[in-house]
Length: 432
Image 1 (cartoon, rainbow, N blue to C red):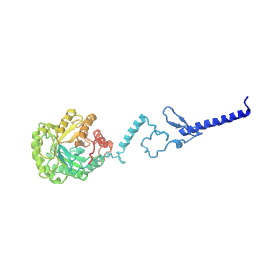
Image 2: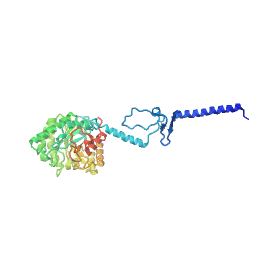
Image 3: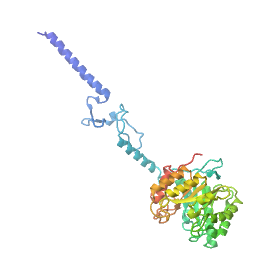
Image 4: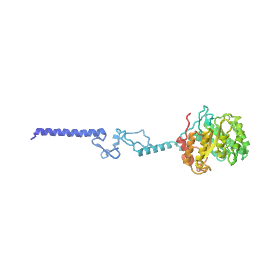
């Protein structure tokens, strides 16, 4: 029979042991964060291994456990809530993807200023005097450079898009470093058909644009925009007179590029173009021996093969190539690459992402393939066209009357695509 003394001792031992067990369990739970105080207990969810408070008795338990992150901006989705002791817990795949998409949206939103003006955030370099070496456009140190910009539509149709204010806006908001001033020669009051007053007016518009580009540290292409006249020899005398005046006025400028014929077409051969070029180029060279000169090629500036067989014998010459992504595809790209690999200096003075007639929708698949070549070979280029004409290749929406400082919604489908390429850095800037 057990004595009362032993029973009492066993009872005391059991009490002490129970207290020790309970205290130990509580201490362990407290250490692991499952409880903070006896009256504040957390329920553990085995489904997602995250911790949540019981809200039966505590009104604001977040202040006790959740780590505060005041530095997180409100527009960015905060990380999944975890206790401080468990930093190894990773967000789920779905959470990661959602955060990434939202971050991209925030980046795009940041490209719009407070007043709603669309800004790419880019600013292409200005390199000073340019020249052509080994088939490449280079700066004064012989380093290859790349110009990225926009061509106006004909300034006899849309002069309001070639003003100094518009050019400054393009530099400030789009960041481009070249503007092409397209002056038609025979179409709709073109330089060669509209009379002397019209000639003076168009020349004044060209000069105003050149001065604005110079002021904004941009390159400017003076484009003698042959088209329906087909053969540049048709108005060769007018061309010689025009470029003679232009080069005398801008002989000291490092930023002026002369495009002596836009898109020879019809039955015009390379022999015809070469004959024309051999008379016009010396007019420029006699005044400015170093200016870069662009020469159009047959078949609407798409035939480079005939040029390879019989190039011009002048320095600082580049040959133009034009494409429209929805119409010109693999065969056209192969021809261009073949010429580039052969060392022919090529400048894409005009291109579009729609059909060759200037209409239709952007062909994104083909556009990306063209941009890959532009990027790979560091080709300089100007997209067609800066206007609000009701056609697919116009960069500004037809219902927008603004001529500068456009909002994103003011841009056409092609305009938005080009803007996005600039803002995402897919048309790359060069390191100086």
